[in-house]
Picture 1: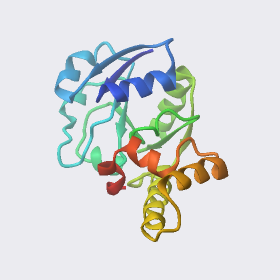
Picture 2: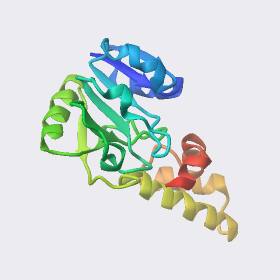
Picture 3: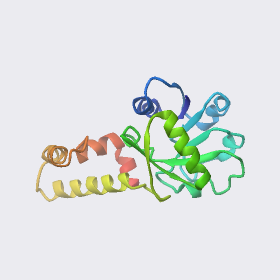
Length: 192
């Protein structure tokens, strides 16, 4: 598949790690630069949507599935004023949350679910369908753990390093809470 990534090089790298080298990738940093690439792409991963700055105009004639980072807004809220024919799928676009065994997604309707199933089959990935809610499921839980870890350090119960090691060993998480906060970015997890 030809995958258009709208976001940073880190977003593109995470897509490549998730979906593999069998696909072709193109990365642009903003939606305006992505508009000319839409005709080329089989699927779009747009990591950028934030409700106050999101513009659906570039997707007016999109025929391929468009995965929108709907971590900080509902998918239905992002596409509320859309009248075109594109199929939108919400996904968790926080750093480290794409490249996992299961793609955490939400859909706006039953037709989008059919497109999602077909697209994920082509991308060779499984998916977990969750409710269209701000924060998805996994990021909300991880961000609560990160907040609790900071409280634990503040209370003097344990050091950051000890907490990171304990969580990795005790829960088999890929990162400890402080490592995860750094990877997600403090600005991002505070928004969760």
